[in-house]
Image 1: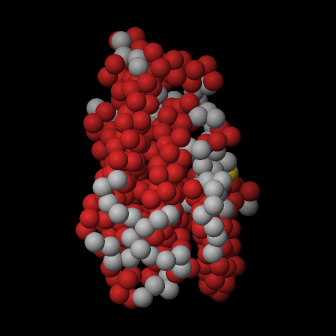
Image 2: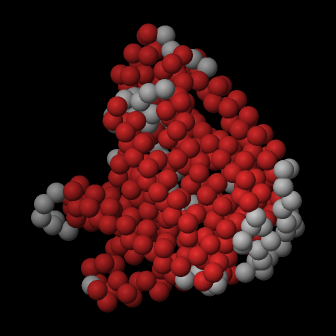
Image 3: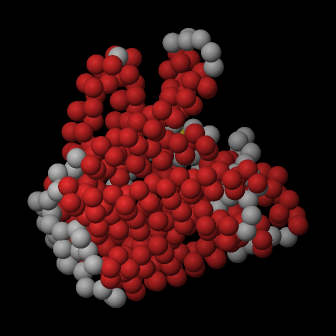
Amino acid sequence: MGTHAAPTSPLDADELRVRVQKRLDEFLAHQAPILDDVSPDLGPLTDSVIDLLRGGKRLRPAFCYWGWRGAGGDASDAAVTAATALELLQACALIHDDVMDGSDTRRGMPAAHRRFATLHRENEWLGSSEGFGLGAAILLGDLCLSWADELLMNCGLSAEQVLRGKPVYDIMRTELMAGQYLDLLEQAVGGGSAERAMRVVRFKSAKYTIERPLHLGAALAGAPDEIHIAYSGYGLPLGEAFQLRDDVLGVFGDPAQTGKPAGDDLREGKRTVLIATALEASTPAQQALLRRHLGDPALDVSGVSALREVITDTGALAHVEALIDALTAQSLAALDTVDLTEPAREILTGLAHAATSRSI
């Protein structure tokens, strides 16, 4: 089943990433002939999901699994399968997010809507290649959402256990979609305060990435209220810190690490806490520069550099880095408020450091 002895990453404890990938491969191998029976033309849908699910850190399955283990659950394959369902939910979110952001790449590959637009163009089909790509990507995301339900409901845990987890899974999906809309709204209205941007962080990412997966694992294990409360105290600030780190990487990150071109969040005009803070602290000249170039899809290297300079000079970068540190400390303190089964406490501590430094 794996070992707890000094894994290279806390995500590899109990061989979790290997086991999650194995379960994904098995599930998609089961789905492929079902789609093929409908029509061989559906092959590109399957191929696109397979390619997308070969990447990723497996954070959500990890927090679900270690939430389960911390509440006394065993290292069973059924628990891993339940946690793996969250990777399909994440695939849905990523595919739809790329459509809404107009992103070109995901995990170093063409985003799904770009991939299907290329398929349309290369085959010289009728109509708009871009429209076809968008439609196909929306349907592909919906398919992943359906598959996530299927995998969770048939994970191998008892019907009673799955029924305990279902309300958490339901609220997690609702919060995710609500957060996605708030993110879309912020772009449409041109952004607002750092407080509004943090609300998007909380519902689009923080709860969905860490707090709710932990709650799902705890619910599946029949954990008492005190564990759910401690998981919120740990998971919500850590989820916020995780997303803030993602926002910093979206502006200052290495493309080899992020899988996206340098400064891509600036081209997409993402209204993050980092950007909101910079706008609030900027001089009129700096604010004008930010508003002129933010969201420019043709933004070049010099433009990215100019915006980075403003974000740094206004103190926004330092502010967000300090916020990440404070939230991480708050998260770790919550683990001391409850008795958790080992090695879950050790792994959750390691995950907190890894998620906020992105050393995973």
